[in-house]
Length: 141
Image (cartoon, rainbow, N blue to C red; front, top):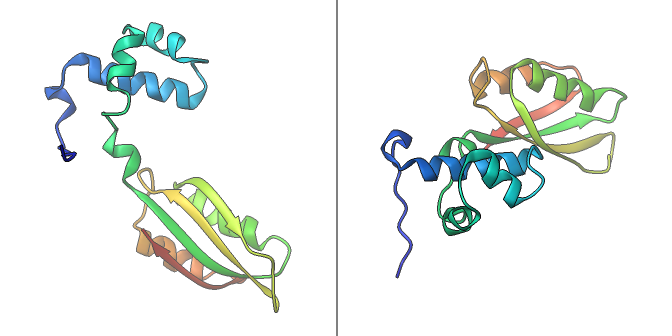
């Protein structure tokens, strides 16, 4: 049978689904050391957790992820300034990848969560492009 995904308001779901999501969050954050502890903390059985863990996801956590791709001058503090600009916008940094500098510049890809940003992605791109050590910057999904 082909998988089919639905987007459903959390208020319409049985409580067990929400508790499974909470248990998964506790495991991911390290607040619960194992599945038994996470299930106990949210008030579900381990079997309920295992039954639903691969079938339910929080759409809010998978949305709002953008990659900022920048070319930076090979100068001290260039990456730090870029990251500070992203943080100042209220974005949450997920991953950072930087190439080895060649010909005085380095490529950087920073994956961010935009859900808590106080500006649009376009405004962030414009703000970052004004930094002295940024040669080029663009954002992609």
